[in-house]
Image (tube, rainbow, N blue to C red):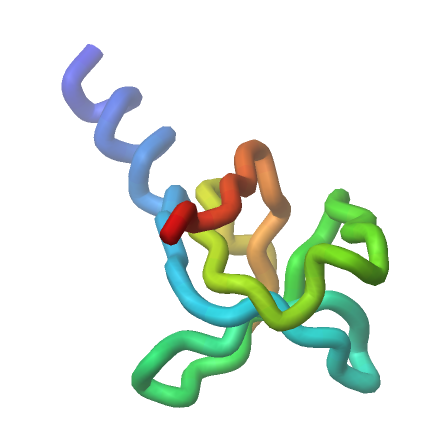
Length: 74
């Protein structure tokens, strides 16, 4: 079972950064300047510009299929 569990977790990722609306859709821009386009997530206009953390499965070079997204509290 360890090999199966390893495969299941290989494409999982947790990303933190600022939620922005880009030409390709909603994306998280990290402090390092990386852009991650979010799939299966439709934010409201009030969500953009805030710091968020998303967790999901990498489904492309810079795409994350979101399973969970939370906004940082200050």
